[in-house]
Image (tube, rainbow, N blue to C red; front, side, top):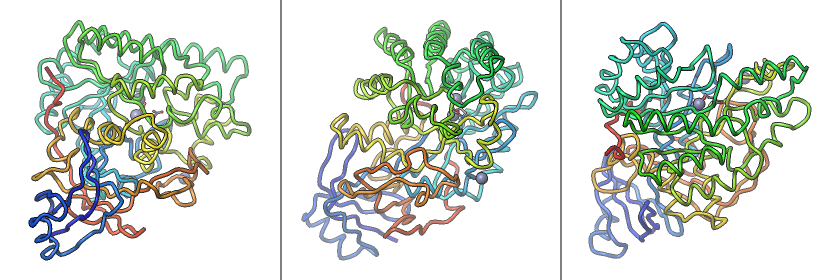
Length: 467
Ligand code: URP
Ligand code: ZN
Ligand code: ZN
Ligand code: ZN
C-alpha cells in the first residue's frame, strides 16, 4: 500500500516547505518538491492520493502524559486504552506514553506488566510507558535497570499524595542516583504534599468543602518550593530532571534559573493551565469539580508566564495529563468533601487544536507548535526518528491539518469517554483533517477508520537530552 500526500505545506520543528510525501507501507518513503519528476511519478503509481492543498502536513502528535484506566480515589479514569487512543487519533495524536503504576508493596516490573495487559490489543495508535515509582526499595531500584532495557526509560515520582504515590526526599535521591547511572529520566510531580495535606485538613475542619478549596489548599508557592527541591536533588545526583504538569510561575522561575545555570532540567505544561484558571474551580453548584486536577488551576496571571516559558523553551513540551473522570458518577464522589474528588481532567483529544490557538494568536510559530507537541516529546523520551518527524524511514504517523477550519469544542461531539468537556463551547480555528498511524488511514473525511489493536507498544530508547 502506498499513499501520496500531495500539495501540502510540510511543517516541522525547524521550518516549513511545500512538499509531496510518499508513504509506503508503515513508513515514510520520500519527500519531494511538488511538480518535480519524482513527485509526478508518485502521483501515477500511489494506491491513494490525498490532496493536502492549503493544509499543513505535520508529524503526528506525541502526548507523553496520559492516564488511561488509572485507579484513583476509589475509581478509574474513564477512558480505556481503546477509547482514549481513538480520541487521541481524532485529535491528531498518534503516540501516547502512559504511566504504568507500581503499587505499594508490589514490584515495579509487575506494574509495567499489568499495564501491558491493559493496553495490548486495545490501542488504536502506538503507545509507550513510563513507570510510576511509588515504592522505592532495593528491589525496585534494581528493577529500574530491567525496565530501561525493556524500553521503559523514564520514571515518575511524586512529592505529592502522601500515603499513595508519595516518595520522601531520600527515596527520590536514591532513584535519581540510579537514573544517573542507567540513563533514565526522573519525571517529578512537584508539589509539597506534606504541607498541602495540613492545609486540606484545616480547610475541611472549617467546613470548607467546595471544589475551589482544592485550589486554595495547594498554593503555587508549594509547587515552587517542591520544584526547587527536586532541582537541588537532581543537581546533587547529576541526574536529568523533567518536571511534569508545571503550572505556577514560581516553579517556572526555578526551572529557568536551573537551566540558565546549565543544569539538565526540563519541564512540560498542559493546555488546561494555559486556558483555564482558578475561577473555573470556583464555578457554583459543584461545577468546579470538573476542573479538579493536581497541581490545580491557577489565578490567570500564571498562564501568561507559561506562554512565555513556551517561547523561551523553559517549557519544552506540552502534554495533556489526560485523566478523565465523569462529572455525574465520578467527580460526584467528592461532593461535600473536595479532597475526595478524583484528580484529573480530560484532554487527549484537543491538545493539538488548543496549542494551535497559540499560533493563531501569534504567541508561538507553527514550527514551535510542532516542536512542542511532537518533535521535542519524541526526542525527550527516546522515540525520535520513528516518531516526531516526517523523514524517510520514520513511521508514517502524519496529520493533515486544516489551519482555517472553524470548530466548537463540545462533549456532544468529542470522542473521549467522559460526560463533559473542560472547554465546552470554545470556538477555535484549525482542525485535524486526516490522520495516518504507521501508514494506516485512521481518520479521514470525518470518520474513524482505525481499529483497536492497530497500535503497538513502542520500546523507547534513552532521551536525546542526556549529556
Ligand atoms: O490530577 C491529576 N493530575 N491526576 C493524574 C495524576 C497525576 O498526578 O498526574
Ligand atoms: Zn502528577
Ligand atoms: Zn499525570
Ligand atoms: Zn461515567
